[in-house]
Image (tube, rainbow, N blue to C red; front, side):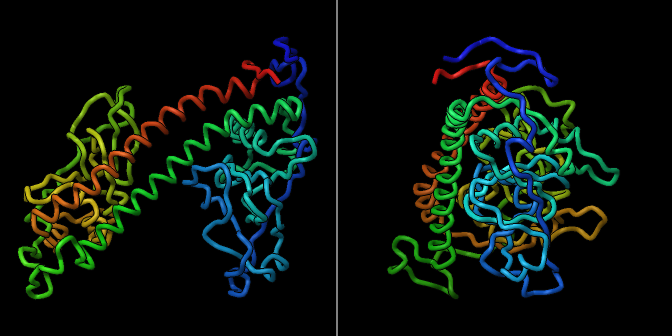
Length: 395
């Protein structure tokens, strides 16, 4: 039977029936390594090799591989270690605090201190424990150039641990939420891939409905044309909106590399397209709802009403806009060069047919993203309460 009584410890109150344990007591801490990059035979093998960069935009719990693999020779000639599945991977330098769980045997570079759970320790519980204590991990890092959490310091840090049964019960609640979040992300990738494949088939391979009966003129279907971007859209400037001036709200704020926050004021009615202007020039981002683009970005205003945002999203994404940056110290998209760049303009009828297929796909993506926001809020609310014993689970 669970109890609601608490006891005082060096890190604060924890449930009376939980134990305060050092990391060294609950996991074997293992460092990583990098094979010599001068020897090409160290890389390109079958052994997954993870670096902090692989986790920088990673939103899942389990990871199976990174950008690069190493060979058996690379493993043997370096300090990298082959880690078993369910090892908890923790970045301890540049930056401190990225966490993931190894889905299979894996290796890491020296930016990690990986935790192989000991008996009666749940990998997923350990994962969530580290996630909720990111700031504590960072505060224990040392170094002038960049913070690094040493192996000895990590091993000495103490955290609350219930029984393995309760660890598993806590992890299951949080994992069930994360599993649904991850499923939505994966579904969205599939839906977006379907839309991209349809665009390629219709507007690159010219296999649109009725293409067999269409007369082609100079390699293009009749009624289609090639025009300059400036003839069909305007790249309008976003508006300055510093972080300290944003008010709490449900309007997404977009910068040059995607969404950067929220605000309570609409600048542009959605759906729309945001294109990076300064910092990340040429990055094309879809804005499914009303939005606020800041001054590091452009937003698309359609001049040719035969076109649609859904078509233009894919057409502009297929153009290497990043190569059109201005020659200056700060990378920036040259709008005049962009305006003179050519773009395919299909017939209005085919664009309308395309919209009929892809608009429902984008609608489903939006619903999934809204559900992710809701589930993430629930998870983030439960996480500190479950991990501190403020909410107990009957087991």
